[in-house]
Each structure stands twice: as structure tokens, then as C-alpha cells.
Length: 154
Image (cartoon, rainbow, N blue to C red; front, top):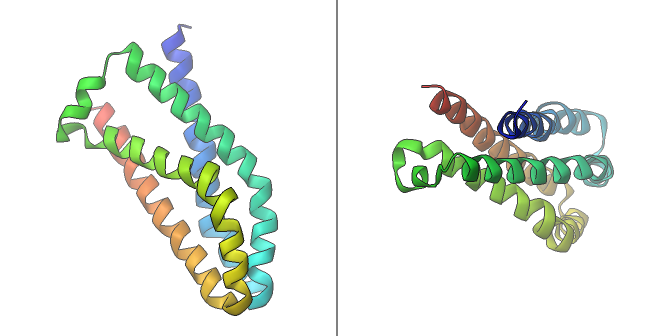
């Protein structure tokens, strides 16, 4: 198996684990937390569980970015970023960049404390905001995946 095939396989694996985890959190975990916990308990409980997923999200985001860059470089696909025809290439980078900033900068430096403070005065609204953010991130990710698969195989 050549390096490109390995990179492609690792890239798909990383995206499956990364976005699959976001899908699980958004469609299973958050609704369960809403049903099983009182409003004041929701943010803290969700935070405790999501912290365990954070290492996987960070690792798979790094792997997806590294393998995506490697494949783009090896196949010399840089020109695809000069045309809207390959919109899904732009979307992949945008989704990756958004998650990377969220996971490595915003969440550990700002969001964690901000959500904790906000939850003290408005636990219901804070949890609703967390749910909305996850839905938006999941929707953007799924649109990107659909576009990337369709675009790369047409």
C-alpha cells in the first residue's frame, strides 16, 4: 500500500471518528442529558462527559488536517482552491479550521469558563445554546462530507 492510500484511509478514519462523535453528542448525548438532568445539572454533567471525548476530537482533528494537507500536497490539488467548482475543498478546510480553533483555542481558553459562568445565571439558556451550536456544527460537517464524497467521485 502506498503512502497516498494510507493517508486516504487515515483521513477517512479520522473524519468518521471525529464527525461521528459530534453526531453522537448532538443526536444522542445532548437529548439524553436534557431528559435526565435538571436545568442546573445539565451543563456540568455535559461538560464532564464531553471532556472525555475532547482528546479523541483533538487527535482526530489533527489527523484529518495532517492527512488532508498531505494528500493535497502530494496530488498537487492546490488549484482546486481557485475555483468554486470544488466548493467542498473550501468547506473541508473551513470545517476543519472551525473545529480546530474551537477545540484547541476557544474551548480551553474561553468557552469553558464562559459557559460555566453563564450557566450560573441561565442554565436552561446555556444548555440550549450548547445544543444549537452542536446542531450547526453537525449540519455544516454533514453537508461538507456529502459534498466531498460526491465531488471527489464525480
